[in-house]
Image 1 (tube, rainbow, N blue to C red):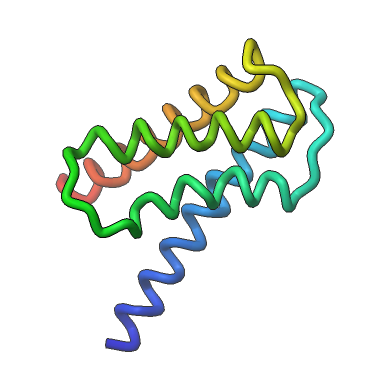
Image 2: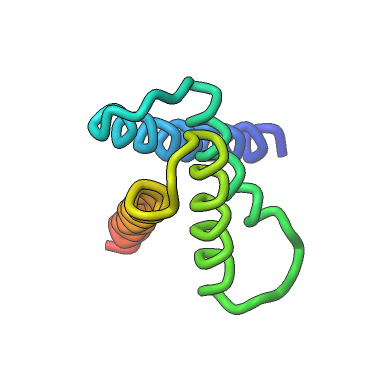
Length: 109
């Protein structure tokens, strides 16, 4: 049990670092001043959707995490909804899902 638990924690921390790093990079490219803790918040809060034990369809957590990322981005980075508050989270979340799909396809083949 211990190895599985630590493997899960390592995987979760790697996903958090990937998502937070992507937000930090996009904010730097757009010259939006944010702190590392704000990027960590924006990256971590949508990950918490996966821990809610509700049996919903597979697309609902993706929609909830993207909507939550938009809200937290607007609050933490102090940007307006259009263009930065909406398009930064949509781009990062789409890229994040594509990377996860690539990892899952790699493990199948």
